[in-house]
Image (tube, rainbow, N blue to C red; front, side, top):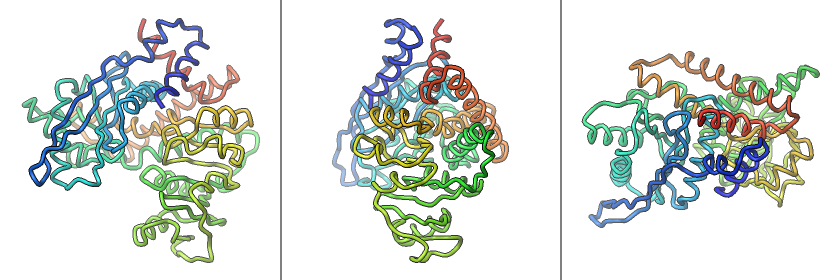
Length: 417
């Protein structure tokens, strides 16, 4: 992942005519903090855990990026994600650079008390290098508003002052923003609609004519499916880690989620409208869902899910990357050459960081906007970001992903001078 993120930046910047020393500045992180956390377990044993905070680039503003707790987290992964956050913030037109944090731990094996002690220990380690105008962390994989609340509390205790804008993704009652939960999925649907309005200026096709398969039914996948359905699209397939369900006439994301909560997996849920019945659909594997005959494919779970093994079986005409890095480089080249339109992750899933920015502004100003205000600002910012990238793509006759990286890199280099 690190190799691939550095390679696309090098290639794009090189293609724009920038010299090697400047490209190095775009790739190398400004700071890489690596540390050991001593976590006291409930049985009084001490467990040593590896933690990181990578601060990649701050020429556009404070570092911004999530903190993940995952047993497979590595320094290289955190560095890659920090690098991509620099690009994502620039793509979205935000006054931020990229950062990312992580701890190599399986949080599902920790008690609530152990999780709180870990969150506070991590916050204490990074307190000297973060702040609302320096580095603004947020939730990521296996972290959530409650964890952000513990971290902010620890940070404020150490600093001896209130600083609600230092962390985003907080609970609403602790200064979090309305609309944050749905923001990533909502941003993806906004970008998809903006893209289709460009493509449909010739054809005038209605949203209801488009079928969508969503691979991944966590927060991002669910809200993308729900909001796309609200906009008139037909979501025909969704999947979770245990399998996928295909409902030819379109499924109800809300009923499917309720059914999943009850039965533990979407493979038991064939939901149309408010009814779940076996006659409406069939189960398919997690591998099969990306190969279904749909118009729009939305990978919203794992990286590298579309690769050399399945790239020639993809039937969708548009892919919206809601997960980070769901398509390998080889598959990306192959699909792009086939004429499939790929909306890259740095644009498609930027809705989360846009609303994090709006939460940061509310924290700094000591106010709270209504959900409608937040959603309207998100729509405006996502459409503006898409428009600039689309123009670059059309003017230079290049794919959207290349255009996104070009726009981002040009902004960063302009700020360096």
